[in-house]
Image 1 (cartoon, rainbow, N blue to C red):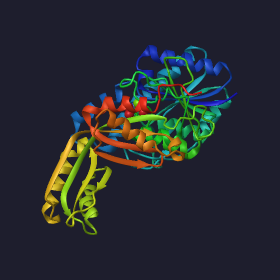
Image 2: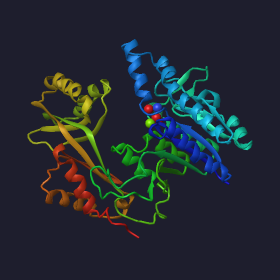
Image 3: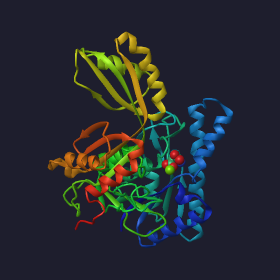
Image 4: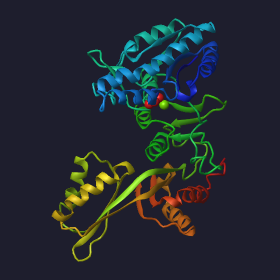
Amino acid sequence: MALYVYKFGGTSVGSAERIQKVADKVKVAHDDGHQIVVVVSAMSGETNRLVELSKQMQQQPSAREMDVLLSTGEQVTMALLSMALQERGCPAQSYTGGQVRILTDDSHTKARIQEIDDTNLRTDLNSGKVAIVAGFQGVTESGHITTLGRGGSDTTAVALAAALKADECHIYTDVDGVYTTDPRIEPKARRLEQITFEEMLEMASLGSKVLQIRAVEFAGKYNVALRVLSSFAEGNGTLITYDEESTMENPLISGIAHNRDEAKLTINGVPDLPGIASRILAPIADENIEIDMIIQNISSDGNTDFTFTVHRNDYEKASKVLEKIKNELGAKAVTGDDKIVKVSIVGVGMRSHAGIASTMFKALADENINIEMISTSEIKISVVVNEKYLELAVRTLHAAFELDKVVL
Ligand code: ASP
Ligand code: MG
């Protein structure tokens, strides 16, 4: 007998029929004698619908009221699923975040979990009930409803699995696992049996949308065995694990990630002096613009070019900041490009193997793809290329690292 936390995302509970299917699935596990906690998202589209409604009431909706509003989506699903289970003769009870007592800080709309009281859930599990918990929400010490940020139900599930010391946390979604790359770009992409937390974290922050980044961080920190599976199809999904050794397939590269939301900005001909980088980036940070890659070239005649990337949505704002500081820095020009993408290779195997970068760059060169920027970490290499090369670059790298081949 095992204790599982199952999380079902918006599409998995997107209609009455789908909630019935989820109930069937949960009942099978319960009948097998397992203890089950189910975390649910709002029905698909519901959270967005509520966001739209709020905008009709207030230009900048109050964060506290936003949380009261958005938390209702999950509350609908949890009650419906509980009813469906009871109808099947499976004892069940639903809980809001506050009813469990998922304690968070008071940063409304992006709260962080501080503590979970597992008393109510334990009592239910010990008396043979399925406990159903609304994802994405918590409560402050003084009783205000909070939410954890969009996609936050994944984090609720992982946090509950950690608090209850669950054997595994299953994230049921509309894909059947984590793939070597986006199958919409490369149909030969394969589902991975296993991937390490570190790799998953890189994949998630580089644009793979399978799991919320914070949930992966949380799972890594508390060593929660996490599995991503399809709620519509059978299969083992992908296990996210600590264990680099046990991965049966031991590829150098586990996956190719991409991110379309990039834009780059260059401030040309700035004096190469101490303090320049901080004088460029401080006003950018003051505007709350996040920076991703940074490059400073070697200088000639005491001047240098300084380039960095930002989210495409921040491109205009960042250009304006640079235009403003251009003169006081004595820079020659500000240039930029918002038609770029980032393509990355990720794999823990990189740590112990030389030559990965040159394989990557040669493969891109053979396709005449110009690399505009490069950045590396211990387990990833990212390049910025023109957006027209996105699909070609992903497919080329997928083939170059033989990710379509099953390694046994
Ligand atoms: N319903 C919330 C959202 O759409 C939380 C979640 O689905 O994880 O962001
Ligand atoms: Mg969701």
